[in-house]
Image 1 (cartoon, rainbow, N blue to C red):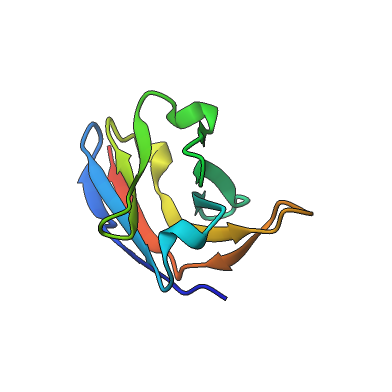
Image 2: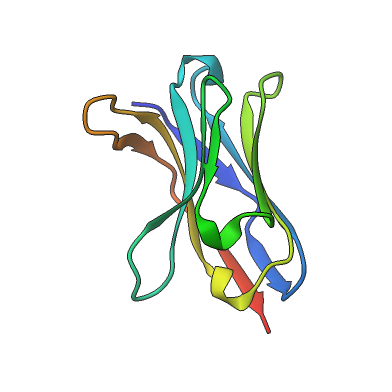
Length: 119
């Protein structure tokens, strides 16, 4: 199982920006996909953004145009750049990696990093 180390959460005012980072224990090249999920209190965990080994990216509708997922192969890191943050973006954000090709579920998860957006 891949270990994932996240960083970059914090408290920001609405309209501000944050960048989350996730470093896997192994090479990023070996991972078929990586993603960011989030879970707000009382809500289900949702996929925020995903990137595949081929470089295909997908986003949930609520963050399109505001968030960007990217990879830095040299630093073996993926990022989630979050701009124009809204209070409804407040959640614990989780990095995920190594998607099972049969059931499409991610097998490795980070510990989560808290993002709080004040109005």
